[in-house]
Image 1 (cartoon, one colour):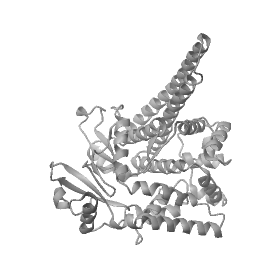
Image 2: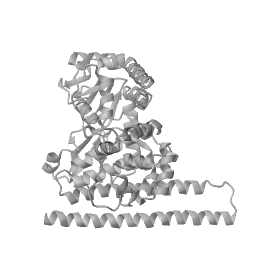
Image 3: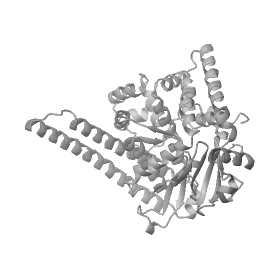
Image 4: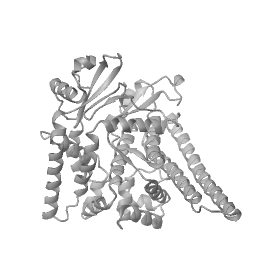
Length: 454
């Protein structure tokens, strides 16, 4: 805690990987998620003066000295702009973070390299490599503004998704001024009940947003913990999406661009997992992870035991998941070495996807914590079905693109064959997606009956 910024960020990254690392490690680091020390108002003013060229009094007619949120790299204050009277949130970087970030990152890297030289089986170099890539991006708040505006543009064509992103007003390297948006953490069940907001709808729409990002847009927010996902109550009669809430996505510093080829291979991997097709799982696991440890990789990716996956039950079972990383390590002591081998082999972007998956699973668990066990299990099942739908969309689109670009010169026969292949690709998607939709409707009906007679 005393070392601050970079070291807290490293601990937070570890704490979010509960489906990959021993629970004891994650729980030890979990306190770092909400025990950050606030900078003084004098320090905040100095940063604003240095970056913006104006003082707090010059910029704002009102500025709350008590931050509404304190994170490892920055803190956020509520304020009112002097020029326009607009209520805003002001994100200000802690003054010492940038000054020492290069030294801290180099220190962590040297420390990890030294440990690896003494203990060659220590294969956590990916942690320091990830820090070297991600932290410089997160420390420049101009990236927040660019990323947020890109997300708004990407989702503008989906008015039925209740996503809200605060308007970015002004950004410098260490100061970000944005629209103030009210709301509470998405996992606050008491708040959801108070405003008659359905946790199932919140879960479903969070899943849709991140599936769209992963499989369709290829531009993924990689830090979706509950503090970065707020629920804002709305009058559904005034919304285009028809819900009585918005999902407010905050903190846009950490994104990854996923290439079309990676999205296709990742979608094929998930599709194989849903079908429990061992040969396909083995093939795509090797393609993505670069290792032959396909069973363990599948377990890490889904958070489910291999027996569930192999029995073709991932998208069908309503039984409770029995997977526990601690139990797995107790039964197979060598498993941690294999996990580190996988994490050291996968592409860097996949490490952040695994972290994102884990955070979303934890949100889902919280949203259904007060529901009957069968409803909780169905919620997990609906999540698999939702992923299956978007996998099918990604596979359909990329296969169609490959068919269209397979040849630049076509005669009548070749053109006809292309049209037939495109039609078959579309029909194959419609058939499988319709099956998923029917199964999803059946589950919803069973859940309604369960709640009715509970």
